[in-house]
Amino acid sequence: MNSLIEQATRRLEQLRQAGVIPKALEDANTGDITANRSGADSLQLSEKKIPENNIKPSSFSRKVDLDLDALAGAGIVSPNAPRSQIADQYRVIKRPLISNAMGKGASLIANGNLIMVTSALAGEGKSFSAINLAMSIATELDNTVMLVDADVARPSVLRMLGLPASPGLLDLLVGDVDDLSSVLLKTNIDKLTLLPSGTPHLRATELLASEAMSQLIKNIANRYSDRIIIFDSPPLLLTTESRVLATHMGQIVMVVHAEKTLQVDIQHALASIEACPVKMMVLNQAKNSLQGGYGGYGYGYGYEQ
Image (cartoon, rainbow, N blue to C red):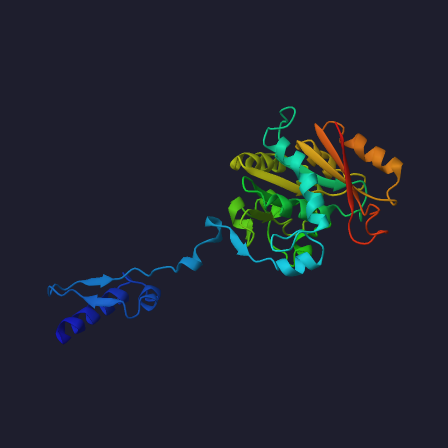
């Protein structure tokens, strides 16, 4: 037996010196050389197996854990939180949106499962509302939801959810990433997936209005029949890309800060998305008679069609 091993070792050295077997391959397979028990002067190099956790990220989505208790403490709807007023308010808000998305509304709406959450100006609570809407829809039995941070100039979705920045939308549009699945973040809420805004880019606004964005929207809209896609969009009056994005949407939720947003700004913002089939207005920080003031987040809602 020792002579067979010695023969195999000498033969391996001869092959290595002749350049048939690179030294790197020999090193990578140290300890995996075995002699053929039949006595033949041959070698078997066992294949080096790649651990499953080293598979290229393009083959699956990354899993992230949300701190649901911390989110509930920040006023965000959470599956683990006890029943609350804000959770009930979002149940009311989401119901017609889901019906329209699934083709069960009064009329069939093209791209009804694409919902853009926006505002006239910054600071009105649109990102907070987009997250809450997505979290609330994720509790549904028959639907899944993807939350897209499309406010590429001032992304805040991951920060508000307590997650670090990550490649995402802009990386797909630039072409640095080819596979959508590789930048999606699956959360510990089974039916909620996140698409981050991605790596900052100087031409972010142009990318959001590009043909690549149009194709990406078609892809994610048609991939799963039960999926509702929520876009946290830039404010309508501060950027042009939000108006381009709106042309792809079936439904738009416009968040208005109670007793802060001017009526003329609301009118101008609504005029910029006039072509969208369904426009829903959500009044953020509305006076709550039960609380006797403006504490917390109160909501009112209405439709513009």
